[in-house]
Image (cartoon, rainbow, N blue to C red):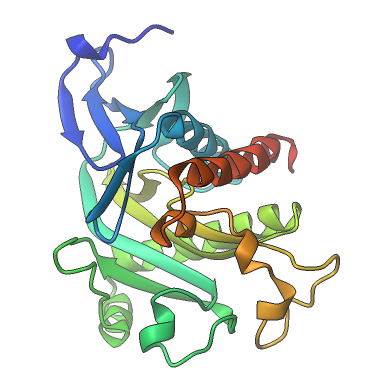
Length: 263
């Protein structure tokens, strides 16, 4: 399908995607992936030729799989390369929702846990999307209070995040990879909370298994996994060469392409 975006209205543009109105259907929009990559709340920025194509492939594979699993999402189809057709939002919720299975990253600095600690049940946190403020986390007690008072949007985001994590954790385990943590975003469509935005190499951490049959049900699983073989955006955050980042993202796409054959 040939799409001419020079003739379409650009509704928004972020760090990694642009959104265009669909002249044929006011209830849908086109989400166009870009080659840009950022880290440090946008402070670090590069353009990696080919990244848009790889991210698009990964995103389409994952959203199609989640749709099949009954998750409520905005994703409809992939009408052209680097383009996703999605349902238009009534309202975007300005939060990132993070679920964690294995402790790493920022939680090591403030969570009083050591690297590799296994969270069971999952830890799920809400962060306000604001780069200058470094995406501050909402107080967990206050979020629990809101849910207890009937704030259905928070309850829905919490439940969907947990649902998606468990679905993808099981899927990646089929390829001897541990889903370490994951951040997702949400919006409202016809009054219903749905999963939106993208799920790509910048959305999660993925660590391969370090051995054939790892024991992943102990309190610390660091020795069972191989962080040095990570397949995610941490390569870029840690100063890796852009060609290495692209190679890792291609590795993710190769795995998620096989999700179409999973039950």
